[in-house]
Amino acid sequence: MFSDTVAAAVQDARVDLAQLHSELRRWDLVVWTAGNVSERIVVDPQSGPGPSDLMVIKPSGVTYDALTPEAMVVCDLDGNLLDGDRVPSSDTAAHAYVYRHLRQVGGIVHTHSTYATAWAARGEAIPCVLTMMADEFGGPIPVGPFAIIGDDSIGRGIVETLRGSRSPAVLMLNHGPFTIGRDGRAAVKAAVMLEEVARTIHLARQLGAPVPIPEDAVASLHDRYQNAYGQPGSSPSVPGASQGRERPE
Ligand SMILES: O=C(CO)[C@@H](O)[C@@H](O)COP(=O)(O)O
Image (cartoon, rainbow, N blue to C red; front, side):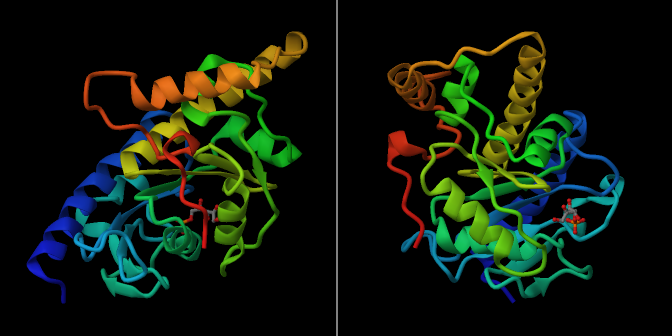
């Protein structure tokens, strides 16, 4: 079905995703079968990411203990199942929409992590009051519209909300967080850090009014973290405004 190169990339993604789904449990971001992770497969590396790419994603409703590399399914970016013997995640349409409209996105995560989802239930953006937020999110974490699962609504809400934000995370109203990254690991990192700041700022607000960080400081913190943090050559978590995030089509 796939060329040798694509088949190898699919197998690598299957292995990655089995490990990344275990990370969602490790960091207490999911319960039961909630949540999902996907990765893009670039079919033609010469021309780069595009609409003919594939995605590997979790099968729907399968317990995390059973999420082996072989359990993952492969879809095209219209959400059609190409390889696998299980029904794809119920969020496949949302993931596919994001991949079609944000070509720099290589990985997507959805969770119902407790504190981030509490902010989503209130429809309140998480204010940028921590340097860790400026580092990873480049500003407040925005709220996306209420959208019913099953068509492009959630994906469209994710893309349109992130259009005006540096953030790799969006809180979908009454639902929960979706995060993006240059690969699955970057998207999982954003989901982990989202839940951490959602909890910290929730606690801070029990004691008083958190103090916003000035925008110029947010921008410089974000630029440093995305471009200079860590070991030489370590890649940023996601191309944000500082790398000129591509505007959705
Ligand atoms: O939130 C939703 C759908 O948006 C949950 O059903 C989702 O977390 C898990 O669904 P899947 O098991 O991936 O089909």
